[in-house]
Image (cartoon, rainbow, N blue to C red; front, side, top):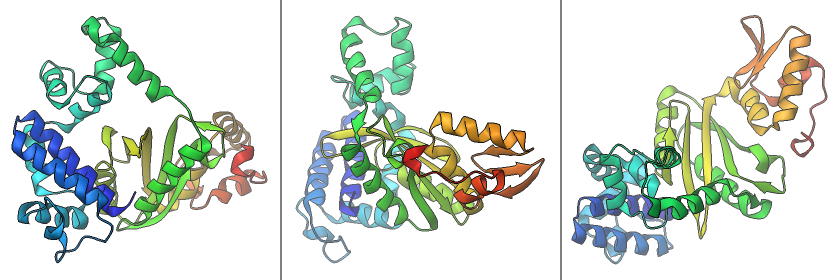
Length: 301
């Protein structure tokens, strides 16, 4: 995803919050500016920002701030009033921003919460089919050509962020699986501050499903395709272990852990340990070398 498309997505999310506030003029103006930013081919600078149709001085400041920090004061102010988690419910056909906010105020906080209430029979029957369809889309598996395009587009954006030391695609896409249900991206960073900033920035690239201290999940849209994308951020001395672990497959990881236990080691996403002492994990090869197994290609795992 290009920087301009990331900016456009940020502006669109701001426009959705304006819709919830019933600020129709700002919602329409911000949405229109987002569309034109997404079409703008040149890198946006302080000199050309206001030359984009619909971008005035205020939105230009928001754009430049987002480029620098991955967020904006306008977004922060709006999210002090409105929890953006509610927007995850807009993946359900017929649920717009205002309806999502109504659900939120009634105690249904996000899409996963909506599904839980629905399964308990606590959501109106008229939402049955739209929720079923949204769940089907969430659980659908997309062919490798589509999933890999989305994954490596995300990877390029992650690599471009400050403080990122290494980054890689993991999961089924790395294994060259025929189909994928979601996207897995791994990154290592220099410091806690870099990790916090990267997760916050990643969460600006789609509708947030959840965000923790080391991982964030979003609905990532490119063109007409939407997939769940997960980003895990680790320290660089755990990058190799995390890459091995999150590449999978589940069966392969079980066999690796079993072999390690036979030899007196413990393997997890942070490294390989002898007792409490970490003996490897910076590189993926560490895991296999220590337990004496040739490292297979990802597609053979």
